[in-house]
Length: 531
Image (cartoon, rainbow, N blue to C red; front, side):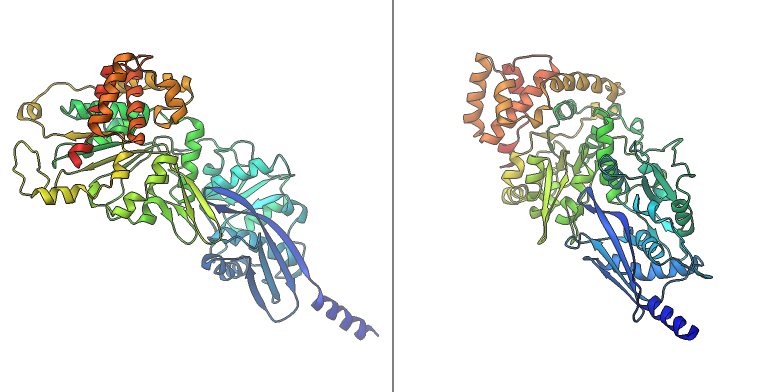
């Protein structure tokens, strides 16, 4: 009888199912969504199955999880293991799910080297979110998008009983940027088990100091730029109203030098904008211990060989491109005419809507991209058309063909277009002290304050708001009507001309757009020159 009872117990043990559910997170665009990692362990041939639309990186987690559990002196169950990542109709990417899968297996089965044991407090497991990549040694490595995960948990905490989130130790400072969420950083699998079992005794992470990614803007300054009064004025107008800019000039005229200094006269980011920008950089894996918070406006300068996906974002599971990395900052396209025409045309939606939508078969993903576009190019293939020193060797047809690479619709969306001329001998050798960035910034901040009282910066004004805020006097109306005829302005370029005029008026502290404001805005239109 004793032998039969023992055999029955063995059979019951072999047919028993073990189940656990772990809360984790995934990413769609810049936003996180909750993912339930469901683990079922049952009798049968030893097998490890992952379902729920995992990509290659998620599928490979089976070997990482198996090795991490064994090297942590824990026994990996020799049974059939099925892991489901819910919702099952959403593609899962990256190694984010390694740690929750391992914890799910240990919570569901709970085997140590010395036999059955209750390894984990299941109540605590159900009230925690867990993310992290596992190394074969059981070490927990940092993952991308932690900032988005913590923002999600901050929202969910109001609806559900969530005690906090377990994250890799290297993501601790990044996660601590969001207040009101309990953060538990871990360095390995065993430490994760310890935190889960002793959650009430362990204090959440408290940041003492969070280093930030601060660009040393005082290393560059507008006082470094000699002459170029008109170009400096154009950049001041651009910074005041967030207007897009095109500079055409011969090599060495200072186009790149001017563009690089635009960030030094842009207003500082507010806290909300810092989090927005940092969130994008977190998703792209561009944060580390020394680079936790993006506190200065980004300056992105992609090479002209950049693909469309590299510029606007993309991939089978889309990730942000250069235009999103330039969010709330400057996107500088040097050698504009060398970019693929299709890549430049892909910027149209981004320039107008301040966001880019990338569609795939299953769903569409939208990334923010509210940037100031600054572009530069030569006037011709040899670079010296119109130069005062060197003679151009290009034919008229070659020049037209070269400049035609900038399509009309793209050019129509650029508010300020100017020619940057070579400096004269007297300007090059002059020791005159140029105006510094701080003084220019003072004027820009005053103009921005005027625009804030109207609700938004001038480049964001809608057609209705243009009618409301862009008031003209009788003289300026006549000048504007004449400009429409002379420059063959489209409806879009007409609106953009008014927006630039409104910014110039704001810099002059004028409530009404006067004729001198429109005339100054008109000198920054090179459509006729380019055509």
